[in-house]
Length: 351
Image (cartoon, rainbow, N blue to C red):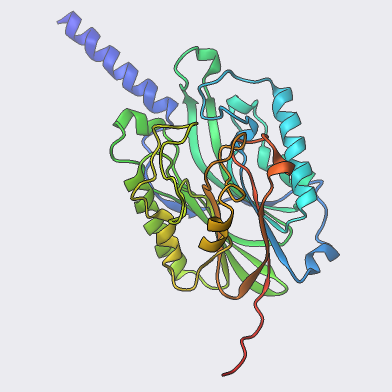
């Protein structure tokens, strides 16, 4: 009897410990995300009167660089300070009005507690921030060994940095892959999209910043379908960008990549689903990809061979410039940033 009671006690203690570390059982939901102004960032000025609207899309890999998935060694605080300084320099040089960030830490043991969105906003020149916290835990025990390298306290996700005041920010946590074990999903980050509202020259503009599933094609496509549903209900004009973890339909090859030979994008319709929205246009259309597939690749940063990061927009805009900031960003992240400059579309001639 004592042995049974001891076994029950151990099981209950282990379960309670796991639930504490994971901060309970969390499920998909939508909620109002944090919106704030950044102390030390410049006030909106004449730079916000430009006739173009420029956007950077960047998965910053929490300032770690190559190996950010967590199987490499931990790095000192000085590494993250230097990386954030260099990332802010890239943003200042890009002179974008909006920055869609993914994999940015707000208060994490792994990056020494630095609120990275605030640092990038302040040093990059963005007075306004909308957070999309999507990974919250008291302790993430990954990688499993050694314990000193574990991610630890987790508060991470995405963010929109803006030169324009932010009017609203709704964050949606998307379902996790069903094929993952329950205990694994306890600590697995939610993929998400955030819907952010700004005003550009007095007119409202809707922004969607998204980070979709990386490993399960079926789950990623389900998340893309949910994102499409949200886009269809959102007011125009709008921009949709982020790390979709998916190739455009015209991409070839779709598997057998040297850096991740086990990864396949065969039969993945994620980007096609977004392009199927009648009034969405891709900043990097098929003809651009066909002409220069290497030039538009964003991953991995050290040897780019595929495009995982995207920006689409409604027809109220047209593209002035769209390129990958390869030489500017180097290997600061494992993803390269996109820079897209848009302007109001010219009125169409009457037939």
